[in-house]
Length: 289
Image (cartoon, rainbow, N blue to C red):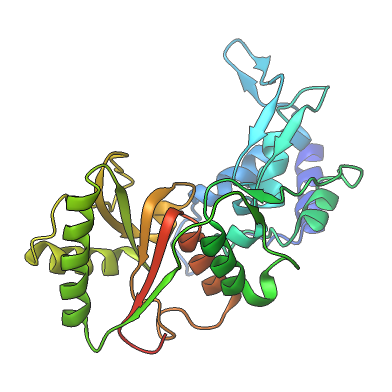
């Protein structure tokens, strides 16, 4: 970068309220490092100062159309980098559900503020009011889970289904015994069903998988590296890993006040877990529901 370009970068970073990076004091021998999260800043600085990102042959990176799914988990600056590759026509589709925002560090509060930050205030948002995945019973439960974060009315659904199950146990042993028997019966009755047991985090998923494996639950798999099989069977994983997927049956493990305190983040987590279910949903807990 030239000196004038560096000054331009400095002004832009100041306007964006970025923290200044330095190598510490004179007695600090640690060299400043770049994290993976800094890639977005560097790419955006390149676009603003040097021009478009380029591909082989030094040609500008341009797409006829850009489709961004799960946009609610990207920050405005990440979206700006992507949108800059859309070419002169600016043909872009952004799709996302703010209620399913799990990346707390991303500054995606609502569509209005994000579009404003991208200088797209003139773009209108088209809310999708119909849920094609889950039954009415599941969608009404997920709407109640969101509480103050929910839209005024639950989404319209096209299918009726079984009631959502709420199961409380005196201890983990009783929960494992019930799950082992119920899951065994389910796989015998519906061998082509795809079942997910969703936990708060991967450590919990491993713990419950090991317990259910000892109870000889059939067709059981632990998914701790996104290695979903997408075929009949029972998979145990955490909620974050299941995002964007769907399963015939979903059992939320330990949906208790201790694991899911009343915070916006935990409400969104439970909402994401509930809406993975296509046909039926159970919420289990050992402690206080």
